[in-house]
Image (cartoon, rainbow, N blue to C red; front, side):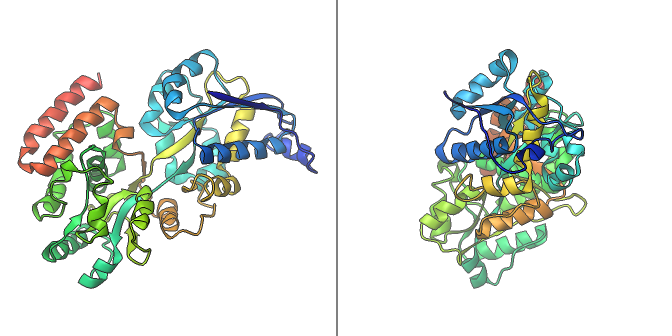
Length: 421
């Protein structure tokens, strides 16, 4: 662990006025503000420390102490420091990853912030990911999109256009298979990629709310809703849509099949773009589309893993902590910290600007304007670890042996009964 302690002073004109901006009665923020970060890699650390310095310039009477902890060490230490000697602000993750600390009473309810128009209107797409029991427990500061990255040149060769619904998706896939290619490359050796497919198929078939109920143990794996999801998945499997022997490949090992044209698309996070470019594909050969609608009666929801800030319940300076949360989600600050030379991801504030990158811009537009159904965190973040492991093993097995569905769902339902108790 490294610790950086500094009193951040500013000689900016009007800084006293800025310092009081967080309060209706105009009094300035003062005292100590302790911030714990897990952004230990160089670029994220620099981005966060610079953001904290800008906040300090606005509030010169605050003494800000920043502690940066290695991300993996942070995961093992968080419960201890939240319980024993809590900071005023701490980084973490959305949705089910924050649930243990919410249920233990270790995170502050910040629903009041989400009533403020600046946050309520501009962070609306992530509200569901920050909500447990009808209350909000933190704010998001960065996320990145998932979706279908595809070979634009292959689509042009075959006369295909981006699908907007399930029938168009299947019709495209049939033409791709007829050309001698797989529709989708995928490597399920480490299971989580199959989790991404289940996320999208289930959210598109049954909607975000049912998906969350299932992953939180409140719906049955043997329900008709879940069977409908797997029936849609099987349509793609039966037509030969997926790369053969995918269970032997990691996600990186599946990339060359898209690069060399043996597969036309990849359902993946935006982190796949850099290795595709490095492998020699130009932006004229790659494009992106939102996973298409399946059930027209459900709103579109997306996977967008989200990093967050929280106020520990035992924080000593909650006024200053709330002011910092407002600062870090503001449109201007979101633009700065998510820039390509900082976090290189997407701002969660819909009024922010995005670096001039084709895929970041498409992702920002999708998540800010075209995802009314909500934002999920990804299967192995939204489900408890043990349930995620059992379920993703089942998904992989289903992709290889779809006739085993009844046995797989029975196993998952038994696991639900055991794990959520």
